[in-house]
Length: 129
Image 1 (cartoon, rainbow, N blue to C red):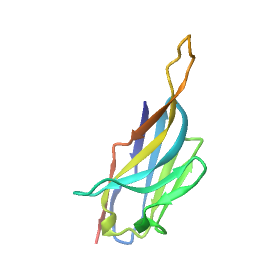
Image 2: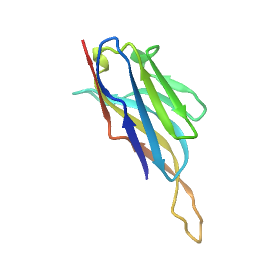
Image 3: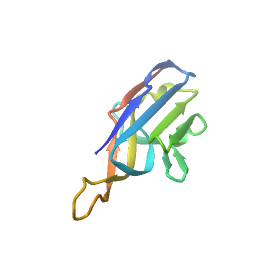
């Protein structure tokens, strides 16, 4: 199991900035993709920004140029710097990670990498007009 712990949400006025952070812990072998999704009331969860192990980033169109995703590969963390926030950015933001974890040791196989996908508990971001 991989646990993701988020921090940094809150209430901000339109035009303001917030920074979200997420730390992954567990028997992590590697993280391939790490990023942020959001879900507004009555809407489906959507991708905000993700970054793969090669540093390639993908942003949702409406946040391009305003949000910046970054990763610390050694610490298994991901951050999202959000600038020029708008009321429509109001949502619960979720951290997501996909990769491989190590199984418990066995005398037969040792420890093997197996795929994982995990979500954080979510952090509320509210932008007032």
